[in-house]
Image (cartoon, rainbow, N blue to C red; front, side, top):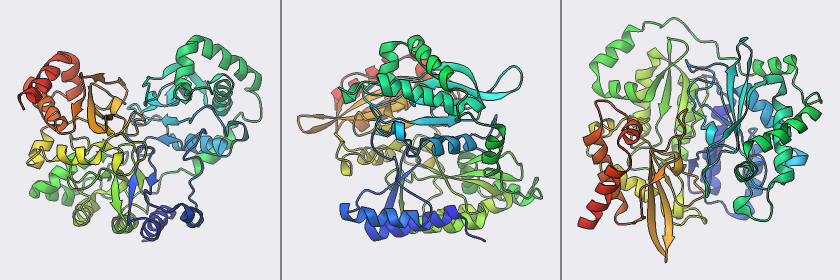
Length: 496
Protein backbone atom coordinates (compact mmCIF):
# COMPACT_ATOMS: atom_id res chain seq x y z
CA UNK A 1 0.00 0.00 0.00
CA UNK A 2 1.15 3.54 -0.69
CA UNK A 3 2.32 5.51 2.30
CA UNK A 4 0.32 8.63 3.11
CA UNK A 5 1.82 11.79 4.53
CA UNK A 6 0.22 10.98 7.89
CA UNK A 7 1.78 7.53 8.26
CA UNK A 8 5.11 9.07 7.20
CA UNK A 9 4.67 11.64 9.97
CA UNK A 10 4.06 8.95 12.58
CA UNK A 11 7.20 7.12 11.46
CA UNK A 12 9.13 10.37 11.87
CA UNK A 13 7.71 10.81 15.38
CA UNK A 14 8.86 7.28 16.19
CA UNK A 15 12.34 8.15 14.97
CA UNK A 16 12.41 11.42 16.94
CA UNK A 17 11.21 9.69 20.12
CA UNK A 18 14.11 7.22 19.89
CA UNK A 19 16.72 9.78 18.93
CA UNK A 20 15.84 12.57 21.37
CA UNK A 21 13.50 11.04 23.96
CA UNK A 22 13.13 7.65 25.69
CA UNK A 23 11.44 5.77 22.88
CA UNK A 24 7.81 6.71 23.49
CA UNK A 25 5.33 9.55 23.05
CA UNK A 26 2.19 10.64 24.88
CA UNK A 27 -1.06 11.53 23.10
CA UNK A 28 -2.72 14.43 24.91
CA UNK A 29 -6.26 15.76 25.31
CA UNK A 30 -5.31 18.43 22.74
CA UNK A 31 -5.03 15.62 20.15
CA UNK A 32 -1.27 16.26 19.98
CA UNK A 33 1.75 14.06 20.65
CA UNK A 34 3.94 15.11 23.57
CA UNK A 35 7.62 14.29 24.11
CA UNK A 36 8.64 14.53 27.75
CA UNK A 37 12.41 14.07 27.80
CA UNK A 38 14.24 16.08 25.08
CA UNK A 39 17.28 18.13 26.10
CA UNK A 40 16.74 21.86 25.55
CA UNK A 41 19.63 22.16 23.12
CA UNK A 42 18.13 19.36 21.00
CA UNK A 43 14.83 21.17 20.41
CA UNK A 44 15.98 23.03 17.23
CA UNK A 45 17.02 19.70 15.71
CA UNK A 46 13.65 18.19 16.61
CA UNK A 47 11.83 21.13 15.01
CA UNK A 48 13.96 20.73 11.89
CA UNK A 49 13.05 17.05 11.63
CA UNK A 50 9.36 17.79 12.21
CA UNK A 51 9.42 20.38 9.43
CA UNK A 52 10.74 17.76 7.01
CA UNK A 53 7.33 16.03 7.19
CA UNK A 54 5.15 19.18 7.37
CA UNK A 55 4.82 19.19 11.15
CA UNK A 56 5.60 21.89 13.68
CA UNK A 57 5.21 22.93 17.32
CA UNK A 58 4.05 26.48 16.60
CA UNK A 59 1.59 27.90 19.15
CA UNK A 60 1.59 24.83 21.36
CA UNK A 61 2.48 27.06 24.32
CA UNK A 62 2.21 30.70 25.30
CA UNK A 63 -0.56 33.29 25.30
CA UNK A 64 -1.76 32.70 21.76
CA UNK A 65 -4.40 30.78 19.80
CA UNK A 66 -3.57 27.10 20.25
CA UNK A 67 -4.27 24.23 17.84
CA UNK A 68 -7.89 23.93 16.70
CA UNK A 69 -9.54 20.66 17.72
CA UNK A 70 -12.56 18.86 16.33
CA UNK A 71 -14.58 15.65 16.28
CA UNK A 72 -12.28 12.67 15.65
CA UNK A 73 -15.05 11.12 13.54
CA UNK A 74 -15.33 14.16 11.27
CA UNK A 75 -16.19 13.26 7.69
CA UNK A 76 -17.32 9.70 8.46
CA UNK A 77 -19.81 9.97 11.35
CA UNK A 78 -23.40 8.97 10.65
CA UNK A 79 -24.79 11.89 12.68
CA UNK A 80 -22.76 14.56 10.88
CA UNK A 81 -24.45 17.79 9.74
CA UNK A 82 -21.40 18.92 7.76
CA UNK A 83 -17.70 18.06 7.84
CA UNK A 84 -16.03 20.53 10.26
CA UNK A 85 -12.46 19.90 9.06
CA UNK A 86 -12.39 22.54 6.28
CA UNK A 87 -13.44 25.19 8.80
CA UNK A 88 -10.76 24.02 11.23
CA UNK A 89 -8.18 24.48 8.50
CA UNK A 90 -9.54 27.93 7.66
CA UNK A 91 -9.23 28.88 11.35
CA UNK A 92 -5.75 27.34 11.56
CA UNK A 93 -4.47 29.38 8.64
CA UNK A 94 -6.02 32.57 10.03
CA UNK A 95 -4.71 32.03 13.57
CA UNK A 96 -1.18 30.80 12.84
CA UNK A 97 1.28 33.65 13.46
CA UNK A 98 -1.59 36.16 13.54
CA UNK A 99 0.29 39.41 14.29
CA UNK A 100 -2.48 40.94 16.40
CA UNK A 101 -3.05 37.90 18.63
CA UNK A 102 0.50 36.76 19.39
CA UNK A 103 0.39 38.14 22.95
CA UNK A 104 -3.12 37.66 24.29
CA UNK A 105 -3.91 38.00 28.01
CA UNK A 106 -3.79 34.19 28.21
CA UNK A 107 -3.89 31.07 26.01
CA UNK A 108 -6.89 30.60 23.73
CA UNK A 109 -8.49 27.36 22.53
CA UNK A 110 -11.08 26.87 19.78
CA UNK A 111 -13.04 23.68 19.03
CA UNK A 112 -15.44 22.90 16.17
CA UNK A 113 -18.12 20.20 16.13
CA UNK A 114 -20.04 19.21 13.01
CA UNK A 115 -22.24 16.38 14.30
CA UNK A 116 -25.38 16.09 16.39
CA UNK A 117 -23.35 14.57 19.24
CA UNK A 118 -20.66 16.83 20.64
CA UNK A 119 -17.43 14.84 20.45
CA UNK A 120 -15.23 17.97 20.55
CA UNK A 121 -16.12 19.27 24.05
CA UNK A 122 -17.08 22.66 22.61
CA UNK A 123 -18.73 23.85 25.84
CA UNK A 124 -15.41 23.85 27.70
CA UNK A 125 -13.39 25.84 25.15
CA UNK A 126 -12.72 29.56 24.93
CA UNK A 127 -14.73 29.50 21.71
CA UNK A 128 -16.91 26.54 20.75
CA UNK A 129 -18.40 26.33 17.27
CA UNK A 130 -21.32 23.99 16.55
CA UNK A 131 -22.31 23.54 12.92
CA UNK A 132 -26.08 24.02 12.61
CA UNK A 133 -28.74 24.51 9.94
CA UNK A 134 -31.23 27.37 10.15
CA UNK A 135 -34.90 27.23 9.18
CA UNK A 136 -33.95 27.79 5.53
CA UNK A 137 -31.57 24.85 5.52
CA UNK A 138 -28.50 27.09 5.38
CA UNK A 139 -25.38 25.87 7.18
CA UNK A 140 -23.74 28.11 9.75
CA UNK A 141 -22.46 28.11 13.32
CA UNK A 142 -23.85 28.37 16.81
CA UNK A 143 -21.10 30.25 18.66
CA UNK A 144 -20.26 29.62 22.32
CA UNK A 145 -17.78 31.73 24.24
CA UNK A 146 -16.16 31.70 27.67
CA UNK A 147 -15.96 28.00 28.44
CA UNK A 148 -12.95 26.37 30.05
CA UNK A 149 -11.62 24.06 32.74
CA UNK A 150 -8.65 24.63 35.04
CA UNK A 151 -8.71 26.71 38.22
CA UNK A 152 -12.16 28.18 37.46
CA UNK A 153 -14.20 25.71 35.38
CA UNK A 154 -17.07 27.34 33.46
CA UNK A 155 -19.36 26.17 30.67
CA UNK A 156 -19.46 28.37 27.57
CA UNK A 157 -22.41 30.65 26.85
CA UNK A 158 -24.05 31.14 23.49
CA UNK A 159 -23.10 34.49 22.01
CA UNK A 160 -24.78 33.93 18.64
CA UNK A 161 -27.34 31.30 17.65
CA UNK A 162 -26.64 31.36 13.93
CA UNK A 163 -23.55 32.77 12.24
CA UNK A 164 -23.41 32.44 8.43
CA UNK A 165 -20.30 30.49 7.47
CA UNK A 166 -18.91 33.31 5.33
CA UNK A 167 -18.74 35.42 8.51
CA UNK A 168 -16.72 32.87 10.48
CA UNK A 169 -13.35 34.65 10.51
CA UNK A 170 -14.71 38.17 10.92
CA UNK A 171 -16.72 37.10 13.97
CA UNK A 172 -13.78 35.24 15.50
CA UNK A 173 -11.61 38.30 14.87
CA UNK A 174 -14.15 40.50 16.66
CA UNK A 175 -14.27 38.18 19.71
CA UNK A 176 -10.48 38.00 19.91
CA UNK A 177 -10.15 41.79 19.62
CA UNK A 178 -12.57 42.43 22.48
CA UNK A 179 -10.76 39.84 24.61
CA UNK A 180 -7.34 41.25 23.70
CA UNK A 181 -8.44 44.78 24.66
CA UNK A 182 -10.45 44.02 27.80
CA UNK A 183 -8.98 40.77 29.18
CA UNK A 184 -7.04 41.10 32.41
CA UNK A 185 -3.25 41.15 32.28
CA UNK A 186 -2.60 41.88 35.97
CA UNK A 187 -3.43 38.37 37.22
CA UNK A 188 -2.81 35.26 35.11
CA UNK A 189 -5.38 33.32 37.12
CA UNK A 190 -8.08 35.76 35.98
CA UNK A 191 -6.81 36.34 32.45
CA UNK A 192 -8.82 33.76 30.46
CA UNK A 193 -11.80 34.91 28.40
CA UNK A 194 -14.15 32.91 30.65
CA UNK A 195 -13.40 35.33 33.51
CA UNK A 196 -13.96 38.36 31.27
CA UNK A 197 -17.32 37.02 30.08
CA UNK A 198 -18.33 36.14 33.64
CA UNK A 199 -17.37 39.54 35.08
CA UNK A 200 -18.70 41.58 32.16
CA UNK A 201 -21.81 39.46 31.58
CA UNK A 202 -22.57 37.73 28.29
CA UNK A 203 -24.93 40.49 27.09
CA UNK A 204 -22.40 43.30 27.55
CA UNK A 205 -19.67 41.17 26.01
CA UNK A 206 -21.94 40.34 23.06
CA UNK A 207 -22.72 44.03 22.50
CA UNK A 208 -19.01 44.89 22.29
CA UNK A 209 -18.35 42.00 19.92
CA UNK A 210 -21.29 42.90 17.68
CA UNK A 211 -20.13 46.54 17.49
CA UNK A 212 -16.64 45.46 16.42
CA UNK A 213 -18.02 42.83 14.08
CA UNK A 214 -20.32 45.28 12.30
CA UNK A 215 -17.25 47.41 11.66
CA UNK A 216 -15.19 44.59 10.08
CA UNK A 217 -17.74 42.04 8.81
CA UNK A 218 -17.32 43.08 5.17
CA UNK A 219 -13.52 43.23 5.33
CA UNK A 220 -11.11 41.01 3.41
CA UNK A 221 -11.58 38.32 6.09
CA UNK A 222 -15.11 37.62 4.84
CA UNK A 223 -15.08 34.15 3.31
CA UNK A 224 -16.25 33.67 -0.25
CA UNK A 225 -18.17 30.61 -1.37
CA UNK A 226 -15.25 29.83 -3.68
CA UNK A 227 -12.74 29.85 -0.80
CA UNK A 228 -14.93 27.59 1.33
CA UNK A 229 -15.36 25.17 -1.58
CA UNK A 230 -11.63 25.24 -2.27
CA UNK A 231 -10.92 24.27 1.33
CA UNK A 232 -13.60 21.58 1.27
CA UNK A 233 -11.95 20.05 -1.81
CA UNK A 234 -8.95 19.09 0.35
CA UNK A 235 -11.18 17.06 2.67
CA UNK A 236 -13.12 14.96 0.18
CA UNK A 237 -13.57 11.45 1.55
CA UNK A 238 -11.43 8.71 0.07
CA UNK A 239 -13.02 6.66 -2.70
CA UNK A 240 -14.40 3.66 -0.84
CA UNK A 241 -15.23 0.20 -2.15
CA UNK A 242 -18.93 -0.62 -1.80
CA UNK A 243 -18.55 -4.31 -2.60
CA UNK A 244 -18.73 -5.65 0.95
CA UNK A 245 -21.97 -4.21 2.30
CA UNK A 246 -23.24 -7.60 3.55
CA UNK A 247 -19.92 -9.15 4.30
CA UNK A 248 -20.74 -12.73 5.30
CA UNK A 249 -17.18 -13.46 6.33
CA UNK A 250 -17.29 -10.63 8.90
CA UNK A 251 -20.56 -11.96 10.30
CA UNK A 252 -19.15 -15.51 10.58
CA UNK A 253 -16.03 -14.22 12.35
CA UNK A 254 -18.20 -12.18 14.70
CA UNK A 255 -20.40 -15.17 15.59
CA UNK A 256 -17.61 -17.72 15.96
CA UNK A 257 -15.02 -15.71 17.94
CA UNK A 258 -16.33 -14.19 21.17
CA UNK A 259 -13.13 -12.22 21.82
CA UNK A 260 -13.36 -10.60 18.39
CA UNK A 261 -17.08 -9.94 18.94
CA UNK A 262 -16.38 -8.08 22.19
CA UNK A 263 -13.77 -5.91 20.45
CA UNK A 264 -16.23 -5.17 17.62
CA UNK A 265 -18.96 -4.23 20.10
CA UNK A 266 -16.73 -1.91 22.15
CA UNK A 267 -14.18 -0.44 19.72
CA UNK A 268 -15.99 -0.21 16.39
CA UNK A 269 -18.48 2.47 15.31
CA UNK A 270 -20.86 2.57 12.36
CA UNK A 271 -19.49 4.37 9.28
CA UNK A 272 -21.44 6.49 6.78
CA UNK A 273 -20.65 3.73 4.29
CA UNK A 274 -22.08 0.35 5.44
CA UNK A 275 -19.14 -1.50 3.84
CA UNK A 276 -16.81 0.08 6.40
CA UNK A 277 -16.32 0.50 10.13
CA UNK A 278 -14.65 3.19 12.21
CA UNK A 279 -12.08 1.46 14.43
CA UNK A 280 -10.71 2.75 17.73
CA UNK A 281 -7.18 1.78 18.77
CA UNK A 282 -7.25 1.83 22.56
CA UNK A 283 -4.20 3.41 24.19
CA UNK A 284 -5.55 2.27 27.57
CA UNK A 285 -4.18 -1.23 28.06
CA UNK A 286 -4.15 -2.12 31.79
CA UNK A 287 -0.36 -2.08 32.12
CA UNK A 288 0.31 1.15 30.17
CA UNK A 289 0.05 4.85 31.12
CA UNK A 290 -3.06 6.21 29.34
CA UNK A 291 -2.18 7.80 26.00
CA UNK A 292 1.36 6.40 25.79
CA UNK A 293 2.74 4.67 22.69
CA UNK A 294 6.22 3.28 22.14
CA UNK A 295 8.27 4.12 19.07
CA UNK A 296 7.86 0.53 17.86
CA UNK A 297 4.08 0.77 18.25
CA UNK A 298 4.13 4.03 16.26
CA UNK A 299 5.87 2.28 13.38
CA UNK A 300 3.49 -0.65 13.50
CA UNK A 301 0.45 1.66 13.64
CA UNK A 302 1.81 3.44 10.56
CA UNK A 303 2.19 0.10 8.76
CA UNK A 304 -1.34 -0.96 9.70
CA UNK A 305 -2.71 2.43 8.64
CA UNK A 306 -1.10 2.00 5.22
CA UNK A 307 -2.45 -1.54 4.94
CA UNK A 308 -6.00 -1.02 6.20
CA UNK A 309 -6.86 2.70 6.33
CA UNK A 310 -5.30 4.48 3.37
CA UNK A 311 -2.44 5.63 5.60
CA UNK A 312 -4.66 7.84 7.75
CA UNK A 313 -4.51 8.05 11.55
CA UNK A 314 -6.52 10.26 13.91
CA UNK A 315 -6.20 11.01 17.61
CA UNK A 316 -9.09 11.68 19.99
CA UNK A 317 -9.38 14.12 22.87
CA UNK A 318 -9.77 11.06 25.10
CA UNK A 319 -6.22 9.95 24.17
CA UNK A 320 -7.05 7.07 21.84
CA UNK A 321 -6.44 6.64 18.10
CA UNK A 322 -8.89 6.08 15.23
CA UNK A 323 -8.75 4.36 11.85
CA UNK A 324 -11.68 6.03 10.09
CA UNK A 325 -12.23 3.82 7.01
CA UNK A 326 -11.66 0.10 7.62
CA UNK A 327 -13.35 -2.42 5.33
CA UNK A 328 -15.60 -4.94 7.07
CA UNK A 329 -13.58 -7.69 5.41
CA UNK A 330 -10.35 -6.35 6.96
CA UNK A 331 -11.57 -5.97 10.55
CA UNK A 332 -10.61 -9.46 11.75
CA UNK A 333 -7.09 -9.27 10.34
CA UNK A 334 -6.63 -5.77 11.78
CA UNK A 335 -7.82 -6.96 15.20
CA UNK A 336 -5.30 -9.80 15.18
CA UNK A 337 -2.50 -7.39 14.27
CA UNK A 338 -3.54 -4.90 16.98
CA UNK A 339 -3.57 -7.68 19.59
CA UNK A 340 0.06 -8.41 18.75
CA UNK A 341 1.06 -4.83 19.67
CA UNK A 342 -1.20 -4.42 22.74
CA UNK A 343 -3.59 -1.97 21.06
CA UNK A 344 -6.77 -4.06 20.97
CA UNK A 345 -8.05 -3.57 24.54
CA UNK A 346 -11.86 -3.59 24.11
CA UNK A 347 -12.63 -0.72 26.46
CA UNK A 348 -13.57 2.39 24.46
CA UNK A 349 -16.10 4.34 26.51
CA UNK A 350 -15.63 1.92 29.43
CA UNK A 351 -14.45 2.64 32.94
CA UNK A 352 -10.80 1.83 32.10
CA UNK A 353 -10.75 4.18 29.08
CA UNK A 354 -9.46 6.91 31.39
CA UNK A 355 -8.18 10.37 30.50
CA UNK A 356 -4.97 10.95 32.41
CA UNK A 357 -2.39 13.75 32.30
CA UNK A 358 1.33 12.91 32.74
CA UNK A 359 1.16 14.07 36.38
CA UNK A 360 4.03 14.42 38.81
CA UNK A 361 6.02 11.68 37.06
CA UNK A 362 6.72 14.05 34.16
CA UNK A 363 5.18 17.49 34.69
CA UNK A 364 6.77 20.26 36.75
CA UNK A 365 3.36 21.86 37.39
CA UNK A 366 1.75 18.78 38.93
CA UNK A 367 0.94 18.45 42.62
CA UNK A 368 0.42 14.68 42.54
CA UNK A 369 0.87 11.61 40.37
CA UNK A 370 -1.84 10.61 37.90
CA UNK A 371 -0.55 7.54 36.06
CA UNK A 372 -0.13 5.31 39.17
CA UNK A 373 -3.71 6.13 40.21
CA UNK A 374 -4.96 5.05 36.77
CA UNK A 375 -2.99 1.81 37.03
CA UNK A 376 -4.39 1.04 40.49
CA UNK A 377 -7.95 1.72 39.34
CA UNK A 378 -7.34 -0.77 36.52
CA UNK A 379 -6.41 -3.39 39.14
CA UNK A 380 -9.92 -3.14 40.62
CA UNK A 381 -11.22 -5.15 37.68
CA UNK A 382 -10.46 -8.87 37.64
CA UNK A 383 -11.71 -9.47 34.11
CA UNK A 384 -12.86 -7.74 30.97
CA UNK A 385 -16.43 -8.69 31.96
CA UNK A 386 -16.07 -6.50 35.06
CA UNK A 387 -14.99 -3.61 32.84
CA UNK A 388 -17.90 -4.08 30.44
CA UNK A 389 -20.31 -4.16 33.36
CA UNK A 390 -19.36 -0.50 33.89
CA UNK A 391 -20.35 0.85 30.50
CA UNK A 392 -20.73 4.54 29.58
CA UNK A 393 -18.61 5.69 32.49
CA UNK A 394 -15.64 8.05 32.22
CA UNK A 395 -12.90 8.63 34.78
CA UNK A 396 -10.69 11.68 34.19
CA UNK A 397 -7.52 12.30 36.23
CA UNK A 398 -5.52 15.55 36.56
CA UNK A 399 -2.35 16.03 38.59
CA UNK A 400 -3.09 19.71 39.23
CA UNK A 401 -5.84 22.29 38.82
CA UNK A 402 -4.70 23.19 35.29
CA UNK A 403 -6.99 20.27 34.41
CA UNK A 404 -5.10 18.80 31.46
CA UNK A 405 -6.87 15.56 32.38
CA UNK A 406 -10.32 17.25 32.13
CA UNK A 407 -11.28 16.05 35.63
CA UNK A 408 -14.11 18.59 35.94
CA UNK A 409 -16.04 16.98 33.06
CA UNK A 410 -15.38 13.34 33.92
CA UNK A 411 -18.35 11.32 35.17
CA UNK A 412 -15.85 10.67 37.96
CA UNK A 413 -13.10 13.28 38.22
CA UNK A 414 -9.91 12.99 40.25
CA UNK A 415 -7.72 16.04 41.00
CA UNK A 416 -4.31 15.79 42.66
CA UNK A 417 -3.53 18.36 45.37
CA UNK A 418 -0.47 18.90 47.54
CA UNK A 419 -0.86 19.05 51.32
CA UNK A 420 2.39 19.67 53.18
CA UNK A 421 4.35 17.66 50.66
CA UNK A 422 1.90 14.75 50.56
CA UNK A 423 -0.34 13.67 47.68
CA UNK A 424 -4.07 14.07 48.24
CA UNK A 425 -6.94 13.80 45.77
CA UNK A 426 -10.27 15.57 45.39
CA UNK A 427 -13.09 13.58 43.75
CA UNK A 428 -15.90 15.10 41.70
CA UNK A 429 -18.98 13.35 40.33
CA UNK A 430 -21.42 14.11 37.54
CA UNK A 431 -19.29 15.92 34.99
CA UNK A 432 -19.82 15.70 31.23
CA UNK A 433 -18.18 17.25 28.15
CA UNK A 434 -20.85 16.18 25.65
CA UNK A 435 -24.18 17.77 24.64
CA UNK A 436 -25.42 17.55 28.23
CA UNK A 437 -22.26 19.27 29.50
CA UNK A 438 -21.96 19.73 33.24
CA UNK A 439 -19.22 20.37 35.76
CA UNK A 440 -18.62 17.74 38.40
CA UNK A 441 -19.76 18.25 42.00
CA UNK A 442 -17.08 17.87 44.65
CA UNK A 443 -17.68 14.80 46.80
CA UNK A 444 -16.23 16.35 49.97
CA UNK A 445 -12.81 16.62 51.64
CA UNK A 446 -9.87 15.23 49.68
CA UNK A 447 -8.57 11.68 50.12
CA UNK A 448 -5.00 10.70 50.97
CA UNK A 449 -3.03 8.87 48.29
CA UNK A 450 -3.49 5.54 50.11
CA UNK A 451 -7.30 5.95 50.28
CA UNK A 452 -8.33 7.41 46.94
CA UNK A 453 -8.62 4.15 44.97
CA UNK A 454 -10.75 2.61 47.76
CA UNK A 455 -13.00 5.65 47.49
CA UNK A 456 -13.36 5.15 43.73
CA UNK A 457 -14.15 1.47 44.30
CA UNK A 458 -16.91 2.36 46.77
CA UNK A 459 -18.39 4.91 44.32
CA UNK A 460 -18.49 2.27 41.59
CA UNK A 461 -20.16 -0.18 43.98
CA UNK A 462 -22.91 2.33 44.80
CA UNK A 463 -23.50 2.83 41.08
CA UNK A 464 -23.81 -0.93 40.46
CA UNK A 465 -26.25 -1.28 43.37
CA UNK A 466 -28.42 1.72 42.52
CA UNK A 467 -28.58 1.80 38.71
CA UNK A 468 -31.68 0.83 36.79
CA UNK A 469 -31.07 -1.90 34.17
CA UNK A 470 -28.58 -0.46 31.63
CA UNK A 471 -28.64 3.04 33.17
CA UNK A 472 -25.40 4.99 32.55
CA UNK A 473 -23.50 6.36 35.54
CA UNK A 474 -24.40 9.97 34.74
CA UNK A 475 -28.13 9.20 34.72
CA UNK A 476 -27.85 7.31 38.00
CA UNK A 477 -25.95 10.18 39.61
CA UNK A 478 -28.46 12.76 38.40
CA UNK A 479 -31.33 10.62 39.67
CA UNK A 480 -30.08 9.73 43.18
CA UNK A 481 -27.75 12.68 43.83
CA UNK A 482 -24.39 13.00 45.55
CA UNK A 483 -25.25 11.79 49.04
CA UNK A 484 -25.28 7.97 48.60
CA UNK A 485 -21.85 8.08 46.93
CA UNK A 486 -20.46 10.47 49.53
CA UNK A 487 -21.75 8.43 52.46
CA UNK A 488 -20.21 5.18 51.20
CA UNK A 489 -16.85 6.67 50.18
CA UNK A 490 -16.16 8.24 53.56
CA UNK A 491 -17.58 5.29 55.52
CA UNK A 492 -15.24 2.89 53.70
CA UNK A 493 -12.18 5.00 54.40
CA UNK A 494 -13.08 5.56 58.06
CA UNK A 495 -13.44 1.80 58.46
CA UNK A 496 -10.05 1.26 56.82
